[in-house]
Length: 332
Image (cartoon, rainbow, N blue to C red; front, side, top):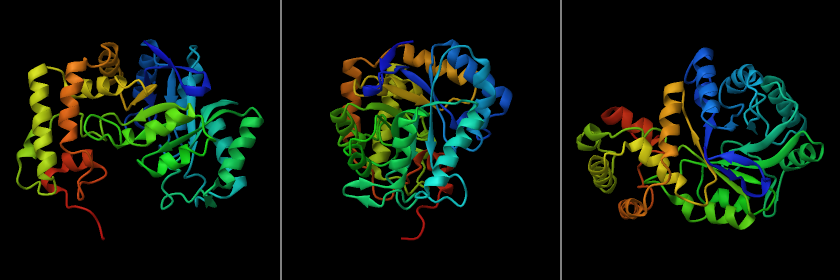
């Protein structure tokens, strides 16, 4: 598999990487996880991302990775552990890293990321936003100086707050999720340019947009009961599905090959939960980027809805699966 240099880290990472969420108990059992990880490595994947927030992912990977001889690059995160979680408690942050090392059965973490550094309503990391400051940054820099952590990163999900944190210059890698895929592209405006200006490595998560691009939701698009789906998005999905029919390229393959066509992206995470899903994703990426003519057509389709419609749920994949049973946002 093709490899890329991950920004200023100098690490060579496979174009397709493995996200750890679905090889946890969220997606499979230990045997299924072992088969998925081993198959990914056999097919050339050399980068695995996990987090304390991915249920038992660190523990599962800690049982699998020591039996794999191929050198692997591993990233994990700070956030959500221990409970109750205090993102400004230095001792708790260090203890969380030590627990990650124990669970992963490692004495070194290639990349340590802050999980959701851009959502203070979830984790209130920063004592100052201008300039950026907080105990988490102090702890991470200490861990890097001590040789426990190789590189510092961000794992975020916003399109503009995350760019501000990127511009602080403290971080080597950004993992951006839910904002760069076939139809949801807001990371193009600030996140990707800001990361490029800093020489950061770029990892894209959720290329299938939380399942919204895992298949064609034709029935839901035509169902008047799915009243939360904006007319513009509904028409856009019709156009996308028509393109899938015309080209014969399965939607998940199209989504993966779109992301790797962007030279600003170093690697893309797959959420595979089985060896079969790994094989499908690797086969798609091995076909290379989508051709320029198809990318142009996708650009035109994406431009019809350049920003997320007001009532569109953040987790649109789950909402599409629910269809008319989805009942809209919570309290205003």
